Image 1 (cartoon, rainbow, N blue to C red):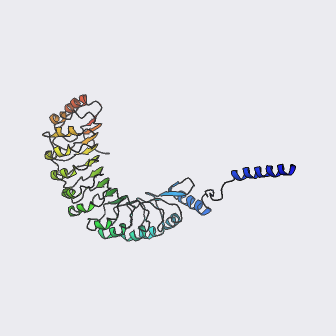
Image 2: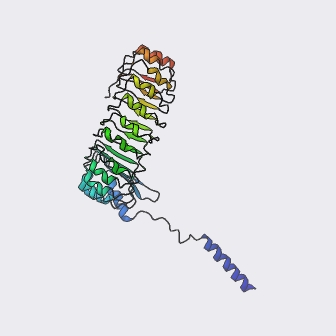
Image 3: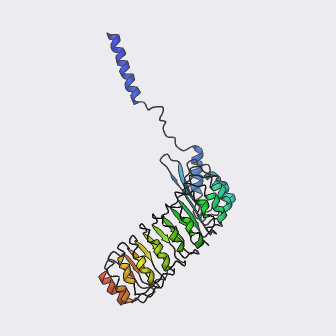
Length: 357
């Protein structure tokens, strides 16, 4: 009997001990290696900013506007979990970028205002997990876009101030996840606007300063998720506004310095999802300005550098939702602004132009 009790007690103790022991199939997370700690110290001492994940692995390196050299880039390339590399304004060229290799977990690469050219794209496009690739002022051409077409997970593509005309835009048709496309101050042509049709998830498009008049939007009816459109400083016309009426999700529309006149305002007034509207520096006066009162969600409205007068300004009184109204460089007087201000006490009305310092 005594032997039986001893065996039973031992079995109970062993069972309890086994239940409290972590399973060998769930190893504890390992911290950074000595090499990773050395890399961290080197990057921070050089002025870089880093971010880590829950396991203390470096996932972000930011040298924006800071000096960087080949040795630092080579060290960055050793980081096994790197997801974001921000190099805007760095003295980085193709040779220095080559030292980082093609980190397989990289999701964000910012090369704006660097000396990196399209010749580096074969290396960059081996980072097949990239979701955000930004250039600005780099000599990227239409021919270079053929490499970018391999980045099928890309959501953001920045090509501002590059040499892209859009002639080979169809080489990007595989980018089914693309949500943001930036083409500010490029020679992008009207004839290539229709080539945006395959990118049906686009939410934000910047075409400021390009060679378009907007007629190509007639072929882009399927971009129904578009929320932010910038066609400022283009020949975007009254007729082109009608092509935007299918965009029921459009929240921001920048028509600054385009070819918009009073004739377009009835169509603009149908874009009832708008929250932000810039009509600065257009041929707009008092005649149909009351059409804008049909926009129930606009809280920011710019009517500067137009032919608006005090009489037209008072027609905006029903827009009680306005937070900011800009009417600088118009015929609006202090008295007229004050009269509307009494009706819209929650609205900041800017009628005196204040140049930036």
